[in-house]
Image (cartoon, rainbow, N blue to C red):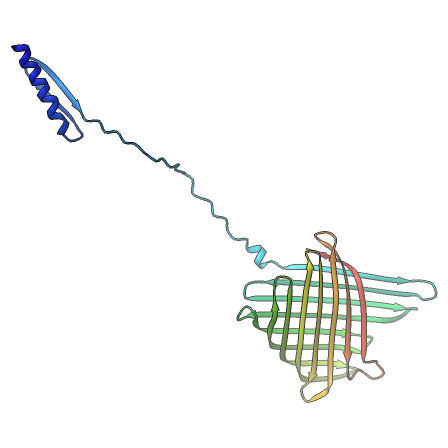
Length: 280
């Protein structure tokens, strides 16, 4: 009978442990036995995710690509010996920088030529233009041009002024813009100094045939405000083809027309240049 009582007591204790919360309970039966009951919880369908102790690396945008200057230098040389002794040397430099709201363009060039020991070409020129875009196509600009041409008897010609421009076409490979503005022009032509106001009307076109070749054209006219028959027209057309990442062949026609040139000088000066360009 005593053995049967012990079995009943143990059975009752095990049954009561099933409704106890998840903790360890100790039940002691005096002079008989100590029973320890533990509730075990099993969790299934657990999903584990890797935890990285290293913070993710976020690559900063390449600011240099957006704001760096693209520079190029080109040079050409023409030599003729025999019945004609001709030498023509030309060099040009161009720097372009574009940001989402601003565009900068600086150019400089020199040309010197002789034929039978007589100077035929001797000029120096430079220009700088800053465009500030209000929209993707509409912008205003500030431009300055300088010229010195000994053969045309232009001791100096300086033109400075603001204006407005608009991209009629602005695609990845093709751009066409028109510009108009007011300028102040100071010059010494044929030994006479003149200062007056002019209007500038211009267009610029460029088309990239592919990643290695491009074609461009530009024209601008500067008529004097109070004397429309006194004007200057600058025209340029050219093509460039690259054969390495840095080197290319460049050919262009440069035409400068002065409607009222210096005394005993012709109105039109045309220069055809072919040379090698280096980009950096």
